[in-house]
Length: 574
Image 1 (cartoon, one colour):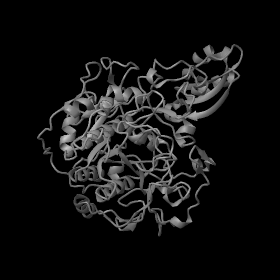
Image 2 (cartoon, rainbow, N blue to C red):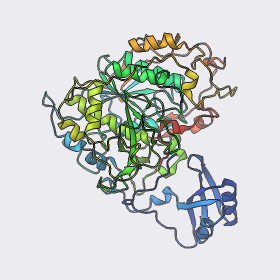
Image 3 (cartoon, rainbow, N blue to C red):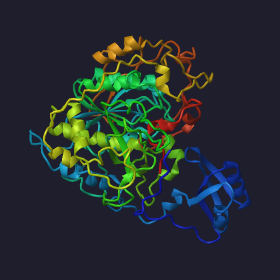
Image 4 (cartoon, helix red, strand yellow):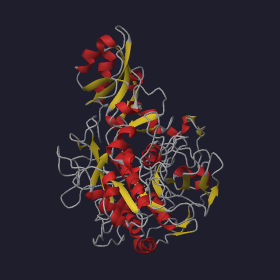
């Protein structure tokens, strides 16, 4: 789990006037002791922030010093909501804004180049599949000609008010870094700090939703999503050439046996460049998360800019998984306190106010740290390469990105791979002749082992999904599935692993505000706990294009007792 601070270039929170209550974030070593300290200071404990071992509180400003020195209290900082009163935030004054990231990675220079057809290189014609928590139609991701909803394979797919949309907030953040672009802008006009622009702003983004409001998903849903991408990669209007998976489990299974590992390898061998987050376990874990452990795919670690524009002082972020000398990250990309698009009212937005950007008067932006962000930025870079040279193989894309990085000379060596992403150098490099020859995976291992320690649970009975079965309760036969996955035929129409999960066609059109979405069907039969899907009571939360109303979903999610949102590799929203 990463703990980040606000960039030095951002204006500090405005201090409260003397004698007035101060809204603060209290980080603790002992939650109970810290809460008692707030009580002694005549303060009030507010929203818990367990993922960062903190809680919000309101405390008289005259008691802040005493609170900071109280037993159980690690630190006391002003809440980000107070910081909104600070000097107006500007993207050109923040080393971790996308305005700065596209310059540091060379993407801005790439956008000025042209492909063989004379088109500016922004990812045009390249489909990037995002397997995540969905994408909400916030400004910058509301272009129906480029943003497509693939199938919703999440537990929320059965609720029309939640279908496709991002109740968690992670997918929207990733989508913006990959393909965001403000309305009315193009590659000639994006060079302004008032515009938000992702790495591949003219690419097509295909969202495959697999996660619910708190990020909970089963590994069978993620595998089904990968298989869908492979089956439909060449569908008209999709041309999926890149797959972003900012997700990983702590599976200890050999990557040659692990089903999730086999799924991404099968996609790779079908011509899809798979970009995966390395993980956020820092030095605590000596193996990359699964499926980043697969040697074929591009495993991306997170770089820390130290809030400066120069790359000379950049280091591997402390939370980025180091791996080991056999398998570590292939390269790094910016991943500390990256400013992306906010999903107002989503789970992350509601529960992690520290992600709000101080001084952002538009309310559009949210800051997040993790190898998720680094993977998304790298996926956008891959899309640029594939517009410039459409016939590149995934092996060639990987070689170009890995062999043209900027060296990182400070900090830890293990975990930073070849260095930091520089897509301009990759675009200008000659096409390499390269074929990876790693031992092929079989995918015949255990589905349960692939889950690692993450399990979803039925919200009514509390029954966890364990063993060799998927969310539909269908038995898992690794050898049968692996053969179909390798051939790209794991899906037959809307059926996967013997059950109907989704429809069979893309509906809608580019002239409507809702755009194109894969047709959804009602799930029949029972789930792994033997409870009928049709008996599910869904929440009344509604997305109106600006925010979520009626947050009753937060109390009725398909989360598990052992589930952790950190599996999405964006471990802190700050």
